Length: 341
Image 1: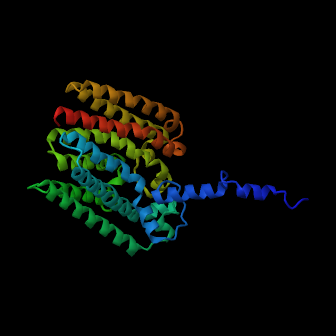
Image 2: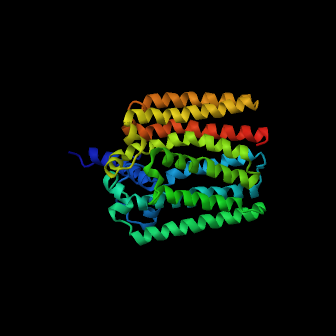
Image 3: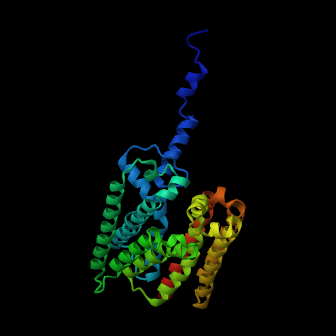
C-alpha cells in the first residue's frame, strides 16, 4: 500500500466537522452537571464548579424573569443605564444569591433523600464536605440580604421593603427544607410555598424597586403562584421513590403518578386562564388574548410529553411548555403596568 494513501482513521481525525460522540456526550453531561439538572453524574473535581452545581443555575431563570415581570408591572421602568444595572442587581439577588442559597440549603437537608434518588449529587457523593456546604449557605444568604439592603437605599424606601422580602423569602426557604416544619413534606403546602417563591417574591421585588407594591399586585401574584404550584409538582416526579421510602407526602406519592400529572397541568392552565379573565375584566383585552394564545401550545406539549409519561418526559416537558408560561407572566406584567398596576 502506498504511504501517501490516508487510512480511514487518519482521515476521520483530520476532519474538522466530525466530533467523537463520546466527547460530545461528556460535554453534555458536564453542562447538565453544572446547571444542576436531573441525571447529572458526578465526576467534577473543581470545588467552584461543585459549588455552582449545588446552586442549580437552571433554577435561577424563573426568579430572574419574575424581577422582569415586576419591573414591567410597576409601569415606571425606563430604559436607562442606571435602571438596567439596578434591575441586574435585583436579578443577582433573586437568582444566583437567594435562589442559590435556597438550592444549597435544600440539598443540605435532602442529603438522605438524594442518597436514594440522586446519589451522584455533590453532598451524598462526598465531593464536598458539610462545613463547606454550610459556609456556602451563609455566604449566599448574607450576600443576598446585603444586595437587598443596597437596593432599598437606591430606591429611597423609608421602609426596607426589598430587605424584608429577602429575609421573608429566605425564612420561607428554610422552613420549606428544614425540620421540624419542613413544608415540603406536605405536597400542597410545600409546592405552593415553592410556587410563591418563584413567582410572587421576585415579582414583588421588581415591583417595589421601580414602583409601589400594591395590594392588587400582591393578590394577583399569589393567585398566579397557584400555577407555580403546578410547576413545582413537576420536580416531585423525579424523587417519588425516595419520597415514598422516607414518608414525604408529595402529590405523586399521595395521588399516584397519573393523577398527580393531571393535577399539575390543570393547576398551571386554570390559574393562567384566571389571570387572562382578570385582564379582560380590567379591559386589557389584547394582553388577555395573547395570554390565552400562549396557553394553547402549552396544553399541546402537556399532552405530547407530560401526561403520557411524566417520569421520563419531565425535563423535555419543562423545556417545551414552560417558556409559554414565563412569556405569559411577562404579558400579564405588561398589562398591569399599562393599566397602572
